[in-house]
Length: 317
Image (tube, rainbow, N blue to C red; front, side):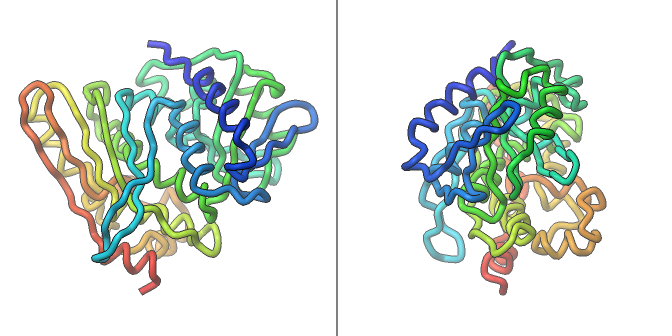
């Protein structure tokens, strides 16, 4: 099925640009072609900008909203993500699977532009690629992209720089924090894909996680946003098929299946020499995952949240 992810995201972009002032975001034209929407670098951004980023990241195939929640024995705002197209929204679009490094510029790239490039192994295994007229991407970074970045993307997506729009926010910003925590469902799907579960069995999904406090710097922000999902994220997956494969794979899905689990992410990252690739990849998953089998009616739950680790991360205790 062609979900037309970039076309869907392009429509969202025009809608949010019409509300740029109220969202506290700013549009910049890049010399040589292309547009960048600043959601938290020089522009202030905010909660609305973060929700907009998350919507664009999922190409509008997920609903993302702020909801009341409770951790630490008190009220705490949470993000709720719900989708009836989990593979397309989360894996084909939202997953930050593109490390963009051009000259001195570096940012993690996500959004539907990834499907236009289609170079990740994930797209080959799941047999999806787009050849759109426009390309829409989201960057997690603190520097605005240069003309060289736009040209690099154009070469890999097949979409001219002039038809490319990027949205950007640093991790240590309100919008950046919101859009990262909104990946709570995506982390569960990616983990399942990596351990060999047929993600096409997942027909619908919901997930929630506490909004991470905005950190003083991006490194600390990476720690807090990861912790929000690893220790506070809860995901429910509505699946089809047998129960046995779920019961066998289920214990491997939550973050607690990793030997690295149990410390704030910044401590884990430091122990790995600040090298993501030295961290056990099985850590990156929500704290709790529940499977609802639509065919058998069986419900299976794995993992649990760890508010004490969240407290250490969020409050520095």
